Length: 352
Image (cartoon, rainbow, N blue to C red; front, side, top):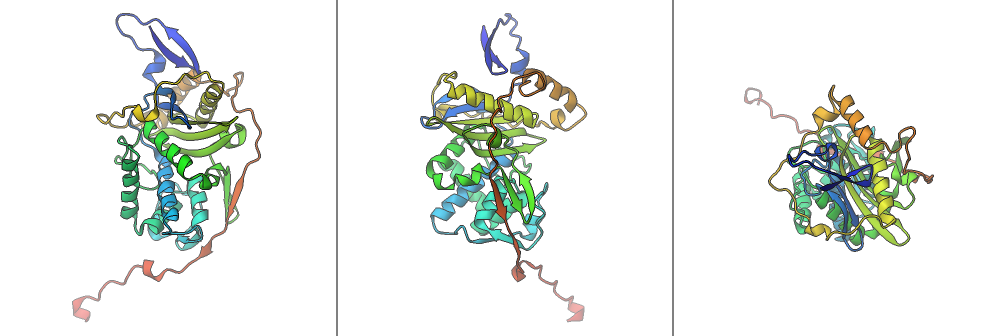
């Protein structure tokens, strides 16, 4: 007999001697719920399985930047300019172009709330001096934290086979940020930013529909599905959830809220500390493209909807609160950076 989980409730299933797996187990994606104070694991499924982090990568970008702020290398007023390299990043919603500049404080809001890939790169270039140096800092911090199932290849999480992590490692990262940098919590609490008049909303619906939510970061790639690192606090207790590979935003938001509710209601028993979980360093991340971004995606989504119907018509929703959205306004300005202008090519010898 094994215990699996359907729609958040324990369900005992008799398993034949042939060892047939349940449908839920066959479609499991990583989930980890942790008590933030004790680091006790409250629930986990495949928390050590490698996965593409997508924009949850930006949590490490934030941590490295927070470290630089504490060390006095930069300040919140340090100007961050969109370089040519930053402007070339994919999936841009910011509307920013080469030369547009904002404060480092606003850059953190843009990268974490709007998940602006261009701003994340510009921020990394400013803090690290150049992109490779910043990425080395990211991996050094991962090593310090014991994130031995993680390697970073960018500050924004765009697809790269060398950019991978686990639910365990992301929980440890999020817990470290929350413990060591509470003064920067505001960067995760905003539900939207307005950049030069253009509003961009966070995909973290819990910020406006689940009381006590503090953050932290969502992420999506076709290769990863919809990821989430969330933190909420109620009645003096804080709980962190990491979810990887959700199919829809509804599934991600509703399942996260359900796990949070069960944790706050003391319905999830503790089972060791998060640091004691083992990463699967012998495996590679699955590629979810075929399930999420092809002609097969409709059938896969229907299967997931049947497993996790919370919030669908006729089903209970765990997103019941109505919380005013915090919107941070960002104003940029134009900067002429002569050093970033490509140098002219040397004149051919015959014309010298």
